[in-house]
Length: 369
Image (tube, rainbow, N blue to C red):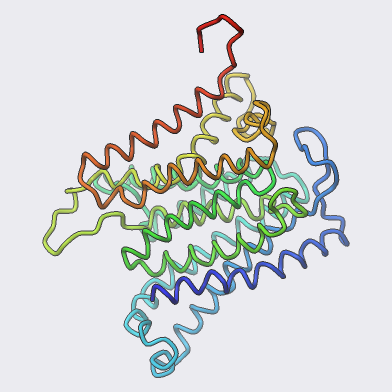
């Protein structure tokens, strides 16, 4: 099953690459372009339809897979993919969850595409995010820290999903940034899913990775197409959902689940950089008396550029930081407490270094930071 899941990456890539090319051409013909102005720093109008390619390259194989799971005879599965036969009952059991996830992503995608064309404002998008997250948390137990009780668990899950969804929406501020970081985070979570034999989550992440890689061919700086909200809301929601569905602790038969309670921090470690950008830019805007949802050039990437990096260098630096913090997440639920503390400390150290480097350089002779 591991190989089958990994093969979904080139499958989604093979769909995303030509779809992105087609979406770029269609956007030029229809005038669906993101024009320079205000906080937008690109020099010429750029198509903003890449999210359509990401959405369909991820969701179409999921729909086909679900249809095949229900309609193909078991004998056919035994010939085509023998390892999958034993997992068919699980797929049938969780079809409602998968369809609800697809419906939630479709709603976010449609709202995002409309917003890319006609600005809807932040609150309409936020309502759709809250409803989509609540549906999964309430009806399908996509939750976190259930020991705290259903109400708290649902509230935390909805808050997490909305936060991560918006984190990747915020990251879509520089060529190649949001899709590249999402690919790194998804690859790390895919490794965790494969080690834990969590095939549904692994397949979803593999499809998302392939879809984003196909899009990045055209989006890596200098970009010839943007994903827009129609893409960023989708990838953020998928990553938030998968982070909650993953099991981060491998337990031997009879082992106690709370033996490695620190595994609950794994998603925070893996997604530390997107959360850092979300938190820092939100605090900056609030301190200025501005709405945190009003776009500007105060994101982590913009601040690095103002420190002297080129835009491409800033993107690569953030990729490296995401990888540096995220890799520890693979081990967090599989190591003893002292080693887990080192992983968390390493993540915190990276964020502290970034925060210090972002501060104003002192004048000559001034010893203050």
